[in-house]
Image (cartoon, rainbow, N blue to C red):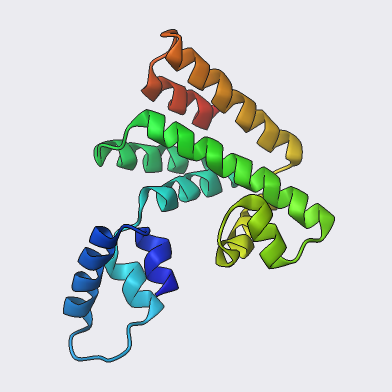
Length: 165
C-alpha cells in the first residue's frame, strides 16, 4: 500500500482509480507486487519532479528537460513545477543537514517534514549534491519565482533556465 500511495499520492479519488486498474491487471491473484504498482499506476507530479532532480544530480540535463516536457504535455503548470522543485531542493538541503548531524530516520523525517519511508530515498539523492549546489538551486528558484511575479520572465522559461543552469 505504501508503494501505491508513494506512486499515486494521497487523493482518495486517485487512489480509487489506481486500485481499480491494479485489480483489473492482477486478475485473480491475491497479492499485488511492487512491480505491479510500478507498471500500472501513473506516477504523480512529485515523482516526476523527483526524477528531474535525480537526472540533474547525475548531469543528465537533457533527460531532466524531457521529464519537464512530459509534465507540460500533461498540462502541469510551470509555476507548480517550479514550486515543487523548490520544495524538493529544500528537502534535500534539510536531508544533508540531518545526515551531517547523524539523526535517526524518524527524527530526520520530522525535521524534513516527510514520512519516514521517504528519508532513505532523499538521503540517496542528496549524496549527489553539495550544500552549496542545493543552496544555489534554491536561490535560483526564488530569483526565477520573483522574475515571474514581476512580469520579467515567463514561467515556462524560468523552469527551463533552472534546469539548464
